Image (cartoon, rainbow, N blue to C red; front, top):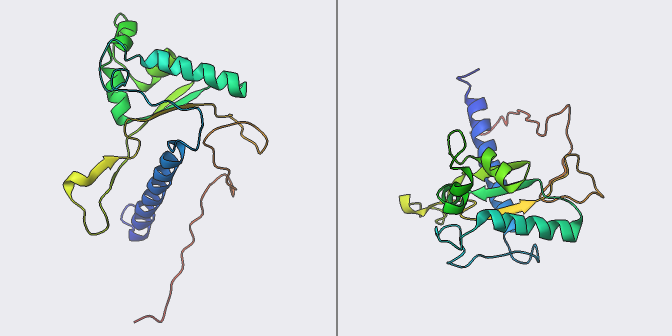
Length: 188
């Protein structure tokens, strides 16, 4: 029912819960103690600066080599924030590789092909980073920022299979969540 208040509230709250989950995942993945083999690019090599030393394709290939060496698994996914994606779209090294293709437009699918990965996800969720009650229009920020993670995710993860950033959940009838409705009567 499109006008159902119960359904609208459930969808809204589910979106907020999943956004918080995404926020926690990003914080976990980009805490330097989580993964010991991480790289922070300096100003000259950062994807945010379109310099001759800014080389996203080579950076991802370097990450691929490190993951292969340490895990024996070839990475198949990257997740990057909107800010990183916007920088890569304008990077001269990336554009030089695609300038003669049909549309010469950098998309997530094209980046996956350039990076030799199965998929690239671009995180676009934003949240208010001010304290409660202190919300202003200037406190809005992207969850993923300018970060990018390259990883291997097993298509059929299991308890003893190497994989990154997977949460195991029990499904009931193919659905990850169940919503039950109840009424608390007697409150005035």
